[in-house]
Image (cartoon, rainbow, N blue to C red; front, side):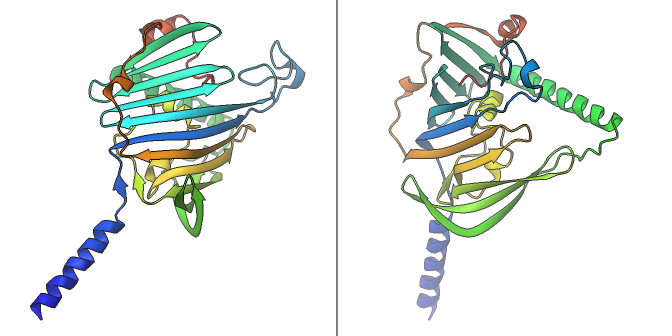
Length: 276
């Protein structure tokens, strides 16, 4: 009898272990992103180009092909668009992120430290607080920031060969309005807690989507629309788990004029444009 009990207990433990979401240690992830930029709400007066968006002076769209290499403390994100190519290399061990930009025949770049990233977050928080204060002075109710609510739906879909499940991310904006985003995620694996696509810039590359890291798996596809009319759709096209990635993949390529982030900011460059 004891033998059967131990066998049953072992089988239950094995089934439990098998069903656990695997934490990725090495992976190569390819994804396709499409961004549709809004028209300038000011119409023809919106900048030198008339009707404008943040990039080209007129409404339009952009497609990006992105490849992410992840191995331990290192992450490399390569993005290719019609406007140029970007590479973001994050070294968590040495707490350093290097961003390389190739556009209009020029190769430039900047690196940021953990201190730089913290300062950037502080500036973003300050700007957010200023906007909230302005809304309050105008008599517009402002909701406190809160963790997103996630609703899991019993639906499945095949993406890049994986069976994915559906979830609804519910985020509140500053006015307390709930924005819902449909996300398809793979419950078989997820990235570790310290995973970063590329610091603050990486968050912008993903559209600043809040709550993706809280899913019970890896986000494989999502689409959303901002209040200003900007739309973004991302889908994973291929994943290689436990991929054989050479350490040389994370080396900084030659030919780039790389400076500290502080010098780039002093030069008046806009770090947040969608040029990737």
